[in-house]
Length: 443
Image (tube, rainbow, N blue to C red):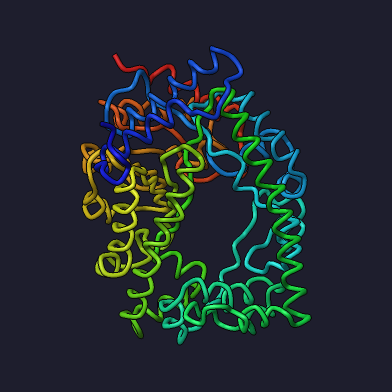
């Protein structure tokens, strides 16, 4: 008798997700060759995640807006013209062979940002030069130091009535909405608070923004579907935020969270813990919808030099570990993008189940990481963006060769850039792709 999902172990759930990833039920491949290539690529990725030897080292194009840079279609245009967004992505994937890609969903819809008067990002033509190759997050103190209790008590209410009005001008009236109380039964008072003219205007803005968001999402999903039909798997199926970074990046800002680490550490830890479960739930829903079990988790403020090892162990790692375990228990694979350096963290982060996570390293000593984590976790990245952008092809090739021969020894390695890239040297990208085929074949 087939087991129900609730009866499966974490390992069994992961195997089930791998099966779905390998044989997607909603994809009609463009050709038998595309289907064969797709399965080869997914098997290659699964073997690497499980620390086994695939047929060769998997290789991925640099993440970010490389597709925009390589096709000459500016980010400022693809954020507004979703057909161009899809065109740039698919053209890029036709021109450069890759084992996987993350899709076009990092190019957010500019029309939505405009409609809601969004202030926590700058983007081309809106705070940045029209030719800017990326957007910028505007860090701020969007949650005050004395508001931790409100966040901990009801994160959804805090998001609706406090956070949204501060980051998007269109939702300023939401701060005057009545707090939702499910114990009142028929929520007449709650509904009435939406009846004021300014609340109605905010709802209209929300309706228009949601329609535009849906147009963007339809294009992203169409593009992802075409990628699959071409035989290119999605690398990650969802995105999550390290719980500490969720507070530090989005709510308190760097200055605010540093002060909180000293002035109200218990409140900070309690808030971080309260966000962990909901982060797991949202990420799992994304994996269910996309079919890819990998969950991309960019790590910001846990890097070397940002906080001490003592602080890392107190504020950052416990909730990040809980997030990873929560995802692993649901059969997902955390893809931990260690931006900057994680040299002083390697012994600590080894404390995760074997063959269940991927560590994507930027400036970390990846050869030391291989020694410490190589028997525990799949390792990814470490081709410097500066080398890919400005280096000589021969130097790129030699760097990739060394990574493949040392870090890729006995499996468990994925070749790609160390960091997200928004500019590109097409010749060097091709060299990286070719290096995987030349040096990465396992005997």
